Amino acid sequence: MRLTRGEHLASRLNYLALGFIALLALLPFLHIVAQSFSSHQAITSGRVTLWPVDFSFEAYVKVLREQAFLNAFKVSLLRTVIGTMLNVVITCMLAYPLSKAYIKGRSAIMFLIVFTMLFNGGMIPTFLVVKATGLLNSFWVYIIPGAVSAFNVIIMKNFFQGVPPELEESAKIDGSSNIGTLIRIVVPLSMPVIATITLFHAVGHWNAFFDTVLYVTDRNLFPLQVYLRELIMFNQSNISNNNGYSANIDSTLLALESLKAAALIASTVPILIVYPFLQKHFVKGIMLGSVKG
Amino acid sequence: MLPGLAYFIIFKYVPMGGIIVAFQDFSAFAGIRGSEWVGLTHFKNMFTDSEFYTVFKNTLLISLYKLIWGFPGPIILALMLNEVRHMLYKRGVQTLVYLPHFLSWVIIGGILVNVLSPATGIVNQLLGMIGLEPIFFLGSQEWFRTVLVVSDIWKEAGWGAIIYLAALASIDPQIYEAAVVDGASKWKQLIHVTLPSLIGTIVILFVLRLGSVLDVGFEQIFVLYNPLVYNVADVIETYVYRTGITQGQFSFTTAVGLFKSVISLILVVLANKAARKLGQDSLW
Image (cartoon, rainbow over all chains, first blue to last red; front, side, top):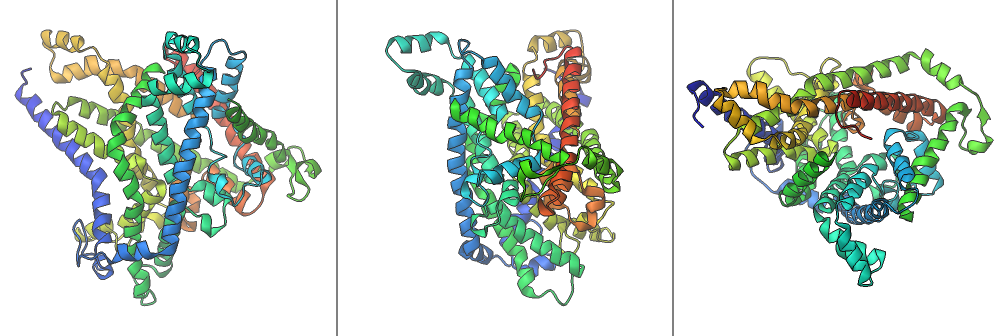
């Protein structure tokens, strides 16, 4: 296609602007990464921008030796693995029967599920129920009260409905049970949508912190996000109380700057590692969802 | 199927029944059955409480700002990306702009506290270079909402663009060819082909967005706010959390929560009706 000179210019500007936007998304990370490798004196005197000053691994060594950090990391990891598996299995088991027209009452059940997306008891009544089930201050409070997402059930159900019924019928004739058909025929065919849902649940579990704030006071059960929040808020409140620099803030507090940066990066790394592998899946998954409505 | 159903009953429908504590003077010792009925007292208190008005106003304002500034972002971004012919460049940009969506608000909060810090933050250092006084963004009533809106756009604009990109990808290339044959410039193509094809997606997303004006992004505010800015940052949900869970006023805050849920429900239903009227797909 031939472009006029004005269009050429516009196109160049567009490339430039997009590059700028992409940088904007990236720069804050680079800044924090640079800080995590710098000494606290360099940070507090404002010499660190995008490149480490007084390069050292010290902050990482400190973070990785910190018992509370390791423990929080373990809680987050366990929560993500167990929680995600349970999410996906229960969602599949619920969505599969709902995708079958011969199941009685399925539209009523579907309505009841969709309704929970529109209206809910709210924070306090839910809190009272969780309390009544005895889940407060237990690891399972991370897994069970969020076990199913109504939205994902709908997406799964729609996808299952698209699986050709002939395949399932032939499996039945070969003597496969319903569960067998689900596991051997339907699930393998539904991998793109299952991958998407898995990713969303996994990220959700890794990033979750509010259920801890609501339901857990036992420090041994704190996940990474809550650990980080305490680290950050502790620092911030000290800064605001002392109005920036005051002789009272000693270097131990300031040393936290690079420590904080290192902890932030260490908690982000797991997501950054899986992200490139999953990107193509989620984009496809979202498009599937949006086209089907 | 049973575990899933049991889940919905226990954790979704039982709490709905729990709403009755809004009409009681709930005491944790007496339980729901033993607590005293007080009718609409809590609702009356709510509407005469000045703090509730502040919180309600904050909720609406923050939501409105996010809508006005945040809604066009993904559309513009998708249009810009759509013009890029260099596939590698396009993918690279996309990878970077989706990324912040996958980080928790705690991490983004940490980054914000860091870059906005009045003493050591890079933003204030830049302001200092051009001779401006440092601003304590997160502790300033004037700036706090701006930080909320900008950081929300930063986190979600790229992600939001995906759905528009999907819509753009489904436009028939023949229409563009026809437009070119008719002598339409790039700009004319944008106005007469691309935008009209997107308008359906834009309308439905906008309407649905209006349906959830009272959901402002609890985690974001919870992570960033502090007593200095409660006045401008406290929204219904953070207020319910603080007075309900941390101060134990279960009944009053359940009433506040119920008020929010009911208004939200009405808004979503109306939004869905509107989307249907406009001839678009609706949620149900």
